[in-house]
Length: 477
Ligand code: FUL
Image (cartoon, rainbow, N blue to C red; front, side, top):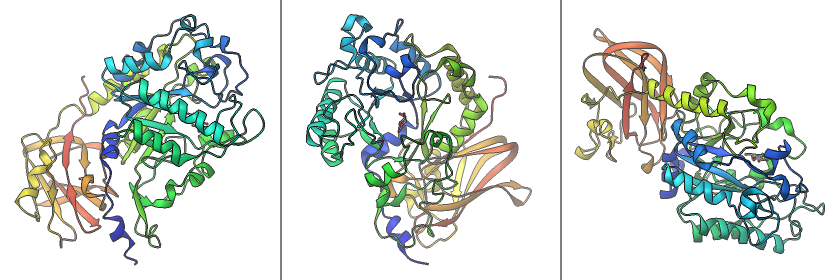
Protein backbone atom coordinates (compact mmCIF):
# COMPACT_ATOMS: atom_id res chain seq x y z
CA UNK A 1 0.00 0.00 0.00
CA UNK A 2 1.35 3.43 -0.90
CA UNK A 3 2.19 5.98 1.75
CA UNK A 4 0.04 8.72 0.25
CA UNK A 5 -2.27 8.69 3.24
CA UNK A 6 0.60 9.91 5.41
CA UNK A 7 0.80 13.06 3.28
CA UNK A 8 -3.00 13.44 3.49
CA UNK A 9 -2.83 13.07 7.28
CA UNK A 10 -0.83 16.30 7.52
CA UNK A 11 -3.44 18.49 5.83
CA UNK A 12 -5.36 20.79 8.18
CA UNK A 13 -8.27 23.22 7.71
CA UNK A 14 -7.92 26.99 7.53
CA UNK A 15 -9.47 29.11 10.25
CA UNK A 16 -12.22 30.21 7.87
CA UNK A 17 -13.04 26.59 7.01
CA UNK A 18 -13.28 25.75 10.71
CA UNK A 19 -15.65 28.66 11.28
CA UNK A 20 -17.76 27.66 8.29
CA UNK A 21 -17.92 24.04 9.50
CA UNK A 22 -19.27 25.13 12.85
CA UNK A 23 -22.34 26.64 11.17
CA UNK A 24 -23.30 23.01 10.38
CA UNK A 25 -26.90 23.49 9.28
CA UNK A 26 -28.09 26.54 7.35
CA UNK A 27 -30.70 27.67 4.88
CA UNK A 28 -30.63 28.42 1.20
CA UNK A 29 -33.34 30.84 0.06
CA UNK A 30 -34.00 30.74 -3.66
CA UNK A 31 -36.05 33.85 -4.32
CA UNK A 32 -36.14 36.05 -7.40
CA UNK A 33 -37.80 36.45 -10.76
CA UNK A 34 -38.42 32.70 -11.03
CA UNK A 35 -40.62 32.89 -7.93
CA UNK A 36 -43.07 34.90 -10.02
CA UNK A 37 -42.78 33.09 -13.34
CA UNK A 38 -42.83 29.58 -11.94
CA UNK A 39 -39.55 28.71 -13.64
CA UNK A 40 -36.43 27.10 -12.27
CA UNK A 41 -34.14 28.80 -14.76
CA UNK A 42 -35.27 32.16 -16.11
CA UNK A 43 -34.03 33.40 -19.47
CA UNK A 44 -33.42 36.96 -18.32
CA UNK A 45 -36.17 38.38 -20.57
CA UNK A 46 -38.93 38.80 -17.98
CA UNK A 47 -39.50 42.53 -17.32
CA UNK A 48 -38.58 43.79 -13.82
CA UNK A 49 -42.22 44.77 -13.18
CA UNK A 50 -43.01 41.08 -12.73
CA UNK A 51 -41.03 40.99 -9.48
CA UNK A 52 -43.77 41.95 -7.07
CA UNK A 53 -43.84 40.38 -3.61
CA UNK A 54 -46.93 41.72 -1.89
CA UNK A 55 -46.16 40.88 1.73
CA UNK A 56 -42.39 40.60 1.86
CA UNK A 57 -41.15 39.80 5.36
CA UNK A 58 -37.50 38.90 5.83
CA UNK A 59 -37.94 38.58 9.59
CA UNK A 60 -40.49 35.84 9.01
CA UNK A 61 -37.80 34.00 6.99
CA UNK A 62 -35.26 34.43 9.75
CA UNK A 63 -37.64 33.23 12.45
CA UNK A 64 -38.64 30.15 10.43
CA UNK A 65 -35.02 29.28 9.68
CA UNK A 66 -33.99 29.78 13.27
CA UNK A 67 -36.83 27.59 14.56
CA UNK A 68 -35.33 24.59 12.73
CA UNK A 69 -32.03 25.00 14.55
CA UNK A 70 -30.25 26.43 11.54
CA UNK A 71 -27.45 28.90 12.11
CA UNK A 72 -27.20 30.76 8.82
CA UNK A 73 -28.92 31.72 5.59
CA UNK A 74 -27.69 32.11 2.01
CA UNK A 75 -29.71 34.25 -0.39
CA UNK A 76 -29.74 33.98 -4.19
CA UNK A 77 -28.89 37.64 -4.76
CA UNK A 78 -28.72 36.98 -8.50
CA UNK A 79 -29.69 33.72 -10.18
CA UNK A 80 -28.93 32.70 -13.78
CA UNK A 81 -31.58 35.11 -15.14
CA UNK A 82 -29.41 38.05 -14.04
CA UNK A 83 -32.12 39.82 -12.02
CA UNK A 84 -30.57 41.48 -8.97
CA UNK A 85 -32.32 41.54 -5.61
CA UNK A 86 -30.38 44.64 -4.63
CA UNK A 87 -30.28 47.97 -6.49
CA UNK A 88 -26.98 47.34 -8.27
CA UNK A 89 -25.43 50.40 -9.83
CA UNK A 90 -24.24 48.32 -12.77
CA UNK A 91 -27.52 47.19 -14.31
CA UNK A 92 -31.10 48.30 -14.74
CA UNK A 93 -32.25 44.71 -14.29
CA UNK A 94 -32.94 44.81 -10.57
CA UNK A 95 -35.41 45.55 -7.79
CA UNK A 96 -34.97 49.26 -8.43
CA UNK A 97 -37.15 48.95 -11.54
CA UNK A 98 -39.73 46.71 -9.92
CA UNK A 99 -42.87 47.57 -7.93
CA UNK A 100 -41.24 46.16 -4.76
CA UNK A 101 -41.23 49.00 -2.20
CA UNK A 102 -41.91 51.34 -5.15
CA UNK A 103 -38.48 50.73 -6.58
CA UNK A 104 -36.83 51.84 -3.33
CA UNK A 105 -36.41 48.35 -1.89
CA UNK A 106 -33.39 46.15 -1.32
CA UNK A 107 -34.14 42.49 -0.61
CA UNK A 108 -30.51 41.74 0.23
CA UNK A 109 -30.46 44.50 2.84
CA UNK A 110 -33.67 43.35 4.48
CA UNK A 111 -32.58 39.72 4.60
CA UNK A 112 -29.10 40.61 5.88
CA UNK A 113 -30.62 42.81 8.60
CA UNK A 114 -33.13 40.13 9.63
CA UNK A 115 -30.33 37.57 9.90
CA UNK A 116 -28.37 39.90 12.11
CA UNK A 117 -31.37 40.55 14.32
CA UNK A 118 -32.04 36.84 14.81
CA UNK A 119 -28.42 35.81 15.24
CA UNK A 120 -28.06 34.02 11.90
CA UNK A 121 -24.96 34.17 9.77
CA UNK A 122 -25.51 35.53 6.29
CA UNK A 123 -24.12 34.35 2.95
CA UNK A 124 -24.59 35.31 -0.69
CA UNK A 125 -25.14 33.36 -3.89
CA UNK A 126 -24.14 35.32 -6.98
CA UNK A 127 -24.53 33.31 -10.17
CA UNK A 128 -21.64 33.80 -12.57
CA UNK A 129 -23.90 32.63 -15.40
CA UNK A 130 -26.02 35.63 -16.40
CA UNK A 131 -28.59 35.33 -19.17
CA UNK A 132 -29.54 39.01 -19.15
CA UNK A 133 -26.33 41.00 -19.00
CA UNK A 134 -25.22 42.02 -22.54
CA UNK A 135 -21.50 41.82 -21.72
CA UNK A 136 -21.82 38.16 -20.74
CA UNK A 137 -19.73 36.14 -23.19
CA UNK A 138 -17.46 39.07 -24.09
CA UNK A 139 -14.63 38.15 -21.74
CA UNK A 140 -13.12 40.99 -19.73
CA UNK A 141 -16.15 43.32 -19.75
CA UNK A 142 -18.29 40.69 -18.06
CA UNK A 143 -15.57 39.71 -15.59
CA UNK A 144 -15.43 43.37 -14.59
CA UNK A 145 -19.23 43.52 -14.34
CA UNK A 146 -19.27 40.44 -12.12
CA UNK A 147 -16.53 41.78 -9.85
CA UNK A 148 -18.28 45.13 -9.55
CA UNK A 149 -21.38 43.33 -8.34
CA UNK A 150 -19.30 41.26 -5.96
CA UNK A 151 -17.85 44.47 -4.53
CA UNK A 152 -21.35 45.80 -3.90
CA UNK A 153 -22.47 42.66 -2.11
CA UNK A 154 -19.23 42.18 -0.19
CA UNK A 155 -18.99 45.72 1.14
CA UNK A 156 -22.55 46.83 1.86
CA UNK A 157 -24.13 44.00 3.82
CA UNK A 158 -21.86 43.28 6.76
CA UNK A 159 -19.82 40.19 7.52
CA UNK A 160 -20.56 37.16 5.32
CA UNK A 161 -19.88 33.59 6.36
CA UNK A 162 -19.82 32.30 2.82
CA UNK A 163 -19.99 33.14 -0.84
CA UNK A 164 -21.71 30.41 -2.82
CA UNK A 165 -20.93 29.91 -6.51
CA UNK A 166 -22.06 27.16 -8.77
CA UNK A 167 -20.17 26.07 -11.85
CA UNK A 168 -23.01 26.64 -14.33
CA UNK A 169 -21.75 28.25 -17.51
CA UNK A 170 -24.44 28.34 -20.16
CA UNK A 171 -24.98 30.67 -23.06
CA UNK A 172 -25.78 34.29 -22.53
CA UNK A 173 -28.19 36.55 -24.39
CA UNK A 174 -25.96 36.66 -27.47
CA UNK A 175 -25.51 32.88 -27.59
CA UNK A 176 -21.97 33.12 -26.23
CA UNK A 177 -20.42 31.49 -23.19
CA UNK A 178 -18.26 33.42 -20.78
CA UNK A 179 -14.80 32.41 -19.72
CA UNK A 180 -14.92 33.12 -15.99
CA UNK A 181 -11.79 34.60 -14.45
CA UNK A 182 -12.17 32.68 -11.20
CA UNK A 183 -8.85 33.69 -9.70
CA UNK A 184 -9.62 37.37 -10.00
CA UNK A 185 -13.10 36.79 -8.49
CA UNK A 186 -11.50 35.01 -5.54
CA UNK A 187 -9.04 37.87 -5.10
CA UNK A 188 -11.95 40.30 -4.62
CA UNK A 189 -13.56 37.91 -2.12
CA UNK A 190 -10.40 37.48 -0.08
CA UNK A 191 -9.77 41.20 -0.10
CA UNK A 192 -13.25 42.22 1.03
CA UNK A 193 -14.44 39.24 3.08
CA UNK A 194 -11.34 37.33 4.18
CA UNK A 195 -13.34 35.20 6.64
CA UNK A 196 -15.99 34.04 4.18
CA UNK A 197 -15.71 30.52 2.79
CA UNK A 198 -15.92 30.30 -0.99
CA UNK A 199 -18.20 27.35 -1.62
CA UNK A 200 -18.62 24.83 -4.42
CA UNK A 201 -16.97 26.55 -7.38
CA UNK A 202 -14.25 27.68 -5.04
CA UNK A 203 -11.37 26.57 -2.86
CA UNK A 204 -12.96 26.19 0.58
CA UNK A 205 -15.99 23.90 0.45
CA UNK A 206 -16.71 20.88 -1.73
CA UNK A 207 -20.08 20.14 -3.29
CA UNK A 208 -21.21 16.67 -2.26
CA UNK A 209 -21.95 15.73 -5.88
CA UNK A 210 -25.75 15.53 -6.04
CA UNK A 211 -28.85 17.48 -5.03
CA UNK A 212 -30.70 14.54 -3.54
CA UNK A 213 -29.24 14.73 -0.04
CA UNK A 214 -27.11 11.62 -0.46
CA UNK A 215 -23.68 11.36 1.21
CA UNK A 216 -20.82 8.92 0.99
CA UNK A 217 -20.30 6.28 3.65
CA UNK A 218 -16.99 7.91 4.47
CA UNK A 219 -17.00 11.63 3.68
CA UNK A 220 -13.37 12.69 3.88
CA UNK A 221 -12.44 16.34 4.26
CA UNK A 222 -8.95 15.66 2.92
CA UNK A 223 -9.10 14.88 -0.79
CA UNK A 224 -6.90 15.19 -3.88
CA UNK A 225 -6.41 18.84 -4.81
CA UNK A 226 -7.67 18.46 -8.39
CA UNK A 227 -11.19 18.11 -7.02
CA UNK A 228 -11.31 21.88 -6.56
CA UNK A 229 -10.32 22.75 -10.14
CA UNK A 230 -13.16 24.81 -11.60
CA UNK A 231 -13.32 22.83 -14.84
CA UNK A 232 -13.79 19.63 -12.86
CA UNK A 233 -16.53 21.18 -10.72
CA UNK A 234 -18.31 22.52 -13.82
CA UNK A 235 -18.01 19.21 -15.64
CA UNK A 236 -19.72 17.42 -12.76
CA UNK A 237 -22.38 20.06 -12.15
CA UNK A 238 -25.86 20.49 -13.43
CA UNK A 239 -26.04 21.08 -17.19
CA UNK A 240 -28.55 23.20 -19.07
CA UNK A 241 -29.90 20.19 -20.93
CA UNK A 242 -29.95 17.78 -18.02
CA UNK A 243 -32.83 18.53 -15.72
CA UNK A 244 -32.94 15.04 -14.25
CA UNK A 245 -29.54 15.60 -12.76
CA UNK A 246 -30.92 17.30 -9.67
CA UNK A 247 -32.57 14.17 -8.39
CA UNK A 248 -29.98 11.57 -9.23
CA UNK A 249 -26.64 10.73 -7.84
CA UNK A 250 -25.61 7.84 -10.02
CA UNK A 251 -22.59 9.59 -11.41
CA UNK A 252 -21.15 10.47 -8.01
CA UNK A 253 -17.74 9.03 -7.26
CA UNK A 254 -18.31 7.08 -4.08
CA UNK A 255 -14.85 7.11 -2.58
CA UNK A 256 -12.73 10.23 -2.65
CA UNK A 257 -10.56 9.91 0.39
CA UNK A 258 -9.85 6.37 1.58
CA UNK A 259 -6.28 5.02 1.55
CA UNK A 260 -7.15 3.03 -1.53
CA UNK A 261 -8.75 5.95 -3.37
CA UNK A 262 -5.79 8.26 -2.80
CA UNK A 263 -3.02 5.70 -3.25
CA UNK A 264 -1.72 7.33 -6.43
CA UNK A 265 -2.17 10.93 -5.32
CA UNK A 266 0.46 13.23 -3.94
CA UNK A 267 -1.22 16.58 -3.56
CA UNK A 268 -4.07 17.06 -1.09
CA UNK A 269 -6.31 19.83 0.21
CA UNK A 270 -8.72 20.32 3.07
CA UNK A 271 -12.01 20.43 1.17
CA UNK A 272 -14.94 19.57 3.43
CA UNK A 273 -18.29 18.53 1.97
CA UNK A 274 -21.57 20.38 1.85
CA UNK A 275 -24.95 18.83 1.04
CA UNK A 276 -27.33 21.18 -0.76
CA UNK A 277 -30.87 19.92 -1.01
CA UNK A 278 -34.30 21.50 -1.26
CA UNK A 279 -37.17 20.96 1.16
CA UNK A 280 -39.33 20.70 -1.98
CA UNK A 281 -38.60 19.19 -5.40
CA UNK A 282 -37.64 22.57 -6.93
CA UNK A 283 -35.19 25.24 -5.79
CA UNK A 284 -37.73 28.02 -6.40
CA UNK A 285 -41.29 28.17 -5.11
CA UNK A 286 -44.02 26.50 -7.16
CA UNK A 287 -47.56 26.32 -5.77
CA UNK A 288 -47.94 22.88 -7.33
CA UNK A 289 -45.29 21.60 -4.91
CA UNK A 290 -47.08 22.68 -1.74
CA UNK A 291 -47.96 19.04 -1.09
CA UNK A 292 -44.42 17.88 -1.68
CA UNK A 293 -42.58 19.35 1.27
CA UNK A 294 -40.20 16.72 2.66
CA UNK A 295 -41.38 14.82 5.71
CA UNK A 296 -39.71 15.14 9.11
CA UNK A 297 -38.41 11.59 8.76
CA UNK A 298 -36.84 12.33 5.41
CA UNK A 299 -35.27 15.55 6.73
CA UNK A 300 -33.95 13.75 9.79
CA UNK A 301 -32.40 11.06 7.65
CA UNK A 302 -30.66 13.69 5.52
CA UNK A 303 -29.54 15.49 8.69
CA UNK A 304 -28.02 12.36 10.22
CA UNK A 305 -26.18 11.52 7.02
CA UNK A 306 -24.85 15.01 6.44
CA UNK A 307 -24.34 16.85 9.75
CA UNK A 308 -23.85 13.46 11.37
CA UNK A 309 -21.48 12.28 8.65
CA UNK A 310 -18.86 15.02 8.44
CA UNK A 311 -20.69 17.25 5.95
CA UNK A 312 -22.69 20.41 6.41
CA UNK A 313 -26.34 20.71 5.44
CA UNK A 314 -27.58 23.55 3.26
CA UNK A 315 -31.35 23.13 3.20
CA UNK A 316 -33.25 25.18 0.64
CA UNK A 317 -36.52 26.84 1.71
CA UNK A 318 -38.08 28.83 -1.12
CA UNK A 319 -40.16 31.90 -0.17
CA UNK A 320 -43.35 32.31 -2.22
CA UNK A 321 -44.84 35.11 -4.32
CA UNK A 322 -45.97 37.04 -1.29
CA UNK A 323 -42.35 37.17 -0.13
CA UNK A 324 -42.86 34.88 2.83
CA UNK A 325 -41.87 31.31 3.60
CA UNK A 326 -45.07 29.34 3.01
CA UNK A 327 -46.88 28.12 6.08
CA UNK A 328 -46.40 24.43 5.33
CA UNK A 329 -42.61 24.85 5.08
CA UNK A 330 -42.49 27.11 8.15
CA UNK A 331 -44.45 24.56 10.19
CA UNK A 332 -42.16 21.78 8.99
CA UNK A 333 -39.09 23.77 10.02
CA UNK A 334 -40.49 24.46 13.45
CA UNK A 335 -41.46 20.81 13.94
CA UNK A 336 -38.02 19.73 12.78
CA UNK A 337 -36.30 22.04 15.25
CA UNK A 338 -38.40 20.59 18.05
CA UNK A 339 -37.63 17.09 16.85
CA UNK A 340 -33.90 17.78 17.07
CA UNK A 341 -34.44 19.07 20.59
CA UNK A 342 -36.20 15.83 21.51
CA UNK A 343 -33.56 13.63 19.88
CA UNK A 344 -30.60 15.32 21.58
CA UNK A 345 -31.97 16.78 24.81
CA UNK A 346 -29.15 16.69 27.39
CA UNK A 347 -25.66 15.28 27.29
CA UNK A 348 -25.78 12.22 29.54
CA UNK A 349 -21.99 12.13 29.77
CA UNK A 350 -21.86 15.29 31.85
CA UNK A 351 -20.23 14.19 35.07
CA UNK A 352 -19.05 10.87 33.59
CA UNK A 353 -15.47 9.61 33.73
CA UNK A 354 -13.22 8.76 30.82
CA UNK A 355 -10.12 6.63 30.53
CA UNK A 356 -8.10 5.33 27.60
CA UNK A 357 -5.63 2.60 26.74
CA UNK A 358 -3.08 5.37 26.24
CA UNK A 359 -2.65 9.12 26.37
CA UNK A 360 0.00 11.07 24.50
CA UNK A 361 0.71 13.17 27.60
CA UNK A 362 -1.10 14.80 30.47
CA UNK A 363 -2.37 17.57 28.23
CA UNK A 364 -4.15 15.08 26.01
CA UNK A 365 -5.95 13.05 28.62
CA UNK A 366 -9.05 10.98 27.98
CA UNK A 367 -11.16 13.24 30.19
CA UNK A 368 -10.71 16.07 27.67
CA UNK A 369 -13.44 14.51 25.51
CA UNK A 370 -16.00 15.35 28.17
CA UNK A 371 -15.11 19.01 28.31
CA UNK A 372 -16.66 21.61 26.10
CA UNK A 373 -13.46 23.37 25.10
CA UNK A 374 -10.59 22.97 22.66
CA UNK A 375 -8.66 20.36 24.65
CA UNK A 376 -8.71 16.88 23.15
CA UNK A 377 -7.66 13.31 23.80
CA UNK A 378 -4.77 11.92 21.80
CA UNK A 379 -3.49 8.38 22.13
CA UNK A 380 0.19 7.40 22.19
CA UNK A 381 1.67 7.65 18.71
CA UNK A 382 2.49 3.97 18.37
CA UNK A 383 -0.86 2.61 19.44
CA UNK A 384 -2.66 1.05 16.51
CA UNK A 385 -6.10 0.51 18.01
CA UNK A 386 -6.52 2.84 20.96
CA UNK A 387 -9.63 2.58 23.09
CA UNK A 388 -11.57 5.15 25.02
CA UNK A 389 -13.91 4.08 27.81
CA UNK A 390 -16.67 6.33 29.11
CA UNK A 391 -18.14 5.50 32.48
CA UNK A 392 -21.55 6.98 33.34
CA UNK A 393 -21.06 5.96 36.95
CA UNK A 394 -24.39 4.13 37.03
CA UNK A 395 -26.38 2.20 34.47
CA UNK A 396 -27.77 4.67 31.93
CA UNK A 397 -30.07 4.42 28.92
CA UNK A 398 -28.91 6.10 25.68
CA UNK A 399 -29.72 5.83 22.00
CA UNK A 400 -27.23 8.13 20.32
CA UNK A 401 -23.64 9.27 20.56
CA UNK A 402 -22.04 12.31 18.99
CA UNK A 403 -18.29 12.18 18.37
CA UNK A 404 -15.93 14.84 17.11
CA UNK A 405 -12.37 14.40 15.99
CA UNK A 406 -9.95 17.23 16.66
CA UNK A 407 -9.85 18.40 13.04
CA UNK A 408 -7.50 21.26 13.82
CA UNK A 409 -4.81 18.58 13.71
CA UNK A 410 -6.27 16.95 10.59
CA UNK A 411 -8.64 14.11 9.82
CA UNK A 412 -7.07 10.77 10.64
CA UNK A 413 -9.55 8.27 12.02
CA UNK A 414 -10.51 5.76 9.32
CA UNK A 415 -12.66 3.32 11.27
CA UNK A 416 -14.03 2.85 14.77
CA UNK A 417 -16.60 0.85 16.61
CA UNK A 418 -18.76 1.34 19.66
CA UNK A 419 -19.39 -1.28 22.35
CA UNK A 420 -21.24 -1.36 25.65
CA UNK A 421 -20.32 -3.22 28.77
CA UNK A 422 -22.46 -6.29 29.45
CA UNK A 423 -21.41 -8.12 32.62
CA UNK A 424 -17.68 -8.56 32.17
CA UNK A 425 -17.81 -8.55 28.36
CA UNK A 426 -18.03 -5.90 25.68
CA UNK A 427 -20.88 -6.08 23.21
CA UNK A 428 -20.39 -4.23 19.94
CA UNK A 429 -23.37 -2.07 18.97
CA UNK A 430 -22.05 -0.20 15.95
CA UNK A 431 -19.29 -0.15 13.37
CA UNK A 432 -18.37 3.04 11.51
CA UNK A 433 -15.88 4.61 9.14
CA UNK A 434 -14.63 8.17 9.63
CA UNK A 435 -15.42 10.73 12.37
CA UNK A 436 -14.12 14.09 11.12
CA UNK A 437 -15.82 17.21 12.36
CA UNK A 438 -18.86 15.33 13.59
CA UNK A 439 -20.24 11.80 13.57
CA UNK A 440 -23.69 11.08 14.96
CA UNK A 441 -24.25 7.44 15.85
CA UNK A 442 -28.02 7.05 16.11
CA UNK A 443 -28.80 3.54 17.28
CA UNK A 444 -31.96 1.73 16.26
CA UNK A 445 -32.66 0.85 19.87
CA UNK A 446 -32.03 2.12 23.36
CA UNK A 447 -29.12 0.56 25.24
CA UNK A 448 -28.64 0.40 28.99
CA UNK A 449 -25.16 0.19 30.33
CA UNK A 450 -22.70 1.77 32.69
CA UNK A 451 -19.78 1.92 30.26
CA UNK A 452 -19.31 2.67 26.60
CA UNK A 453 -16.14 1.78 24.71
CA UNK A 454 -14.98 3.52 21.56
CA UNK A 455 -12.34 1.57 19.74
CA UNK A 456 -10.37 3.26 16.96
CA UNK A 457 -9.82 0.40 14.54
CA UNK A 458 -7.66 2.27 12.10
CA UNK A 459 -6.06 5.70 11.87
CA UNK A 460 -3.42 7.57 9.89
CA UNK A 461 -0.80 7.94 12.58
CA UNK A 462 -2.64 10.05 15.11
CA UNK A 463 -5.91 9.31 16.91
CA UNK A 464 -7.65 12.31 18.47
CA UNK A 465 -11.09 12.95 19.87
CA UNK A 466 -12.23 16.41 20.80
CA UNK A 467 -15.62 15.59 22.23
CA UNK A 468 -18.07 12.77 22.92
CA UNK A 469 -21.63 13.24 24.12
CA UNK A 470 -24.50 10.79 24.63
CA UNK A 471 -28.27 11.25 24.43
CA UNK A 472 -31.55 9.53 25.00
CA UNK A 473 -34.56 10.64 23.01
CA UNK A 474 -37.10 12.44 25.16
CA UNK A 475 -40.45 10.98 24.12
CA UNK A 476 -42.44 13.42 26.19
CA UNK A 477 -41.05 16.74 25.00
C1 FUL B 1 -27.48 25.02 -9.50
C2 FUL B 1 -28.45 25.96 -10.21
O1 FUL B 1 -28.44 25.74 -11.60
C3 FUL B 1 -29.79 25.70 -9.60
O2 FUL B 1 -30.80 26.47 -10.21
C4 FUL B 1 -29.70 25.99 -8.12
O3 FUL B 1 -29.46 27.36 -7.91
C5 FUL B 1 -28.59 25.15 -7.48
C6 FUL B 1 -28.39 25.41 -6.03
O4 FUL B 1 -27.39 25.37 -8.16
O5 FUL B 1 -26.29 24.94 -10.08
